[in-house]
Length: 279
Image (cartoon, rainbow, N blue to C red; front, side, top):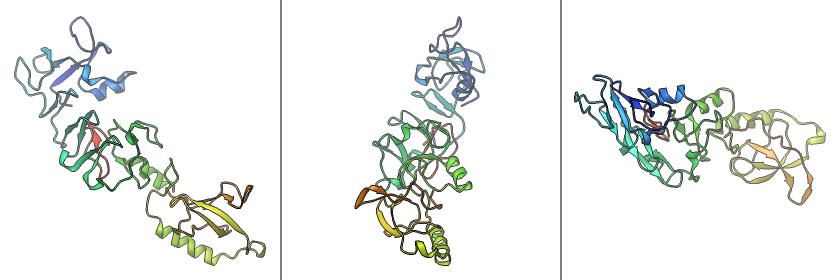
């Protein structure tokens, strides 16, 4: 937000703005952090020039002293900004985003702006951005933090993803599918399985598993290190029922210990490679 203008957010004796909290703030982030409600930008009807203190209708320049409130101005979002972040307004998202409009496209099904490199190459999930991050539980659509879009399509804040990686959680918290390429990890487990001899009573003990990565079922030899999918080679698996005897469970939900681990608005910094940010 530019430091030359304040938003009129109330219906006090001086300012005739939106019916909100009857206070003046220099930016919507400051408002939201200090109040128990979020500002409705499109209802802001008046602003106050911080140079000449004149209260006026929403404009790019002051109607009294002529100062430019911000190099970037969006009349729809009532947004002013002096820093060049490649801001652009997306009507589909209903807000301003950063990173350069030429680098993004709006996916109608996902209902968010995505990197142009993902056009036709990502898994669409209807209104995927209109949900909360499965880690921090904060809104994804209006977040000022980069969102990462994994192969499974379930958006997650990039910082939350990095936190998961640091703690050894490599599976999507929503569906359990691997968030990153785990081939090197699976190779290590292959070596551990080959070097770990099972007791004689388990040599011919078969179990049925479901792979969380390729979503296919397999019949494999039980091993304490992990249960490897016979289709894709992943150890991101769990025990399941014997398909020939559904009433007889072969085991609980235990599986391999190596289970693997999207756009924000214009007030953010540069957009991520996957999803844009909001201001």
